Length: 268
Figure 1 (cartoon, rainbow, N blue to C red):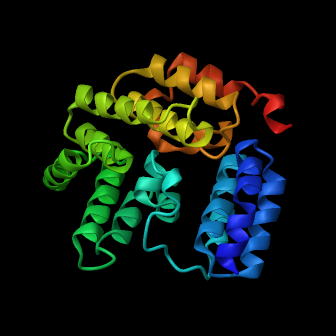
Figure 2 (tube, rainbow, N blue to C red):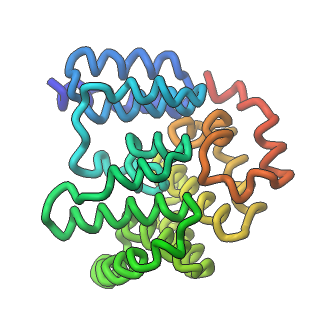
């Protein structure tokens, strides 16, 4: 039932979320959870709808009640932004700057496998960078760097690894390398080839730019996304509360963006 529902509805539901038709998206994801209360993906998208529409973190938390944690990245098209790298359920703690709680959620890997350990390190490094604890995280950053560089040597166009390694380089203070990889990931699948994934990867590039002293470039991408069907990754409500944007929060261009309404054409 879950797979059949999602496959038959993914394009329609995705359109509602991307077009910022929040009430329609809420209705669909709530309906999916009524059919299957353990449907983790529907819960994740419902929580994202609440965050991106109004910034309501507590309502987003309630979307996950009774839903088991996801054991894998699904779907792959979501990868590219740090919230998914950390895990969106855990990222609710990050949004409230409860970084210790977020790290505690990743104290133990989901299983005793190399992939689970990699996933744990990716999440922990992302959380600690956002918490301003890069120096404390240096050992884990170095472990993750070695693992991801080895993986990319074999899979040079692995978008997941490019994104995670970009954040690892941010942790290690290697800004130019972080920017290079984030741009590489975005260039792999531009909007002209895939309107949905391309915008996610652009948002990921903007996040890295915001963290590496490129506020003008980050704001330029955000302005492009806020006036396009990209409600699944960028919204004014989310920009206001997400700590990933803290380094550019007082930038005049970013402040101007926050003061402007999202384009009405996005909601059609």
